[in-house]
Every structure is written in C-alpha cells, then in structure tokens.
Image 1 (cartoon, rainbow, N blue to C red):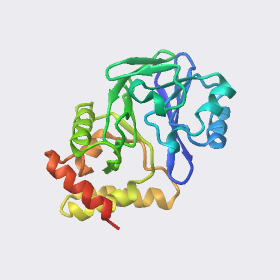
Image 2: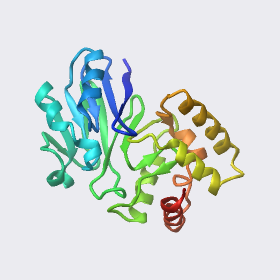
Image 3: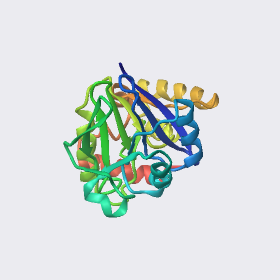
Length: 242
C-alpha cells in the first residue's frame, strides 16, 4: 500500500509533513515546529507517531520535536554531521543511509547549501522527497551556511530522481517564487501557467505542494541553472527581489 502524505500548515508559512505507511500503519512527521496543529493531524489519523524526521537544525523545523517525542515515544532521525545542533537523535544518519517507517524505506541524501548539515529523505516506492529548505517549488533555500557550489550539487542530486517524485518542502513560498521565476524567465510558458495555477490555489487557501519534480524541471530557475555561476547570480537576485 502507498505512503500517505499530508502537509500540515504550521507557524506562519511552514509545512510539517505527516506520513503513514499504508501496510504497517506506522506514522511519521517531518520537521515538526509547532505542537498543536501536528497533534491535531496525528489525532485525526489514529493518534500514533513512530518516527520524527528532521532535515536541518533551524528552530522553525525542530521546535516541537522533544514535546512530540515525550507525548508519543517517537524516535528522532537526523543528520549525524549536525547532531550537536539538533534535538537528541535516536537514529543518526548520513548520505546513502536507509531508514524505515514501518515497511516504507527512505534513502537519506546529503543536501547542504541552506545549512551545512541539511539532509533530505527520499521514499523511492512512492516516490516522494522531503527536502526541507533545499528545494522549494520554483525556488531554493537561502545560502545561510553553504555555498552556491553546495546548493548546485544538492540540486543536481535531486534532479537525478524520477520525474514523478513528489517534492515536499518546508515552506509555502511558491507564489513569491513564481513571481521571481516569471521575472527571470518571462518567455517560459510553463512558468506563466504554473503562476496562474498557484494564484488560484492560494486564493482558495490551498497548499501548492506537493509538486512533481517534472513540474519543477520546467519551472524552477534554480533547478534549471546550468552551472554554479548562474545559480549564484540567481540566488543573489532573489535575495533582493521584491
């Protein structure tokens, strides 16, 4: 049975991601930073939480980790390389490691750039990628700790995944990212179409995520950047774009 995936809106514009393995019933949460909405989502799906997946150390991705661990007895999974800045880890992982949610297997991918210790979780059977603040729909994370080279290499890893991969990222930034994508690539009809779609979704209060990797290949200027210099220039422009 497939992996059930649900975005949980938290804080101002974050998403945590609730997961349930259809075969075993095991449940997980990715990047929990606000207890109340996440507890409500868990309760709505049976009140079980087995594993907490952390992509990086920023407080808007980890703040509710210890409260949820205490409430449900869930195991916490995160990057061994960044363990000193994360909540206490029960399972410390690195690039290429495999972790389970019931019978659903995830592959850990090192994706530095936004932070040095950032990791993403790829469930190949679904397929779905939980990429925190590395890749956004039509955008990428700010380079707070890593370099443009780090981010370029991380995005190349993501670009190698199957087209049908569901991109499940950490923020609802798609509308502002779409405006920038249209600014830098005004002749791209796919960007204009996606912009209209995003505007309609947000007008109805609906999430713009998940989105397929195939759609991101067509519309994301950072994922489409051919080299590090281009990505660095785009990131600098986006940082100042209003």
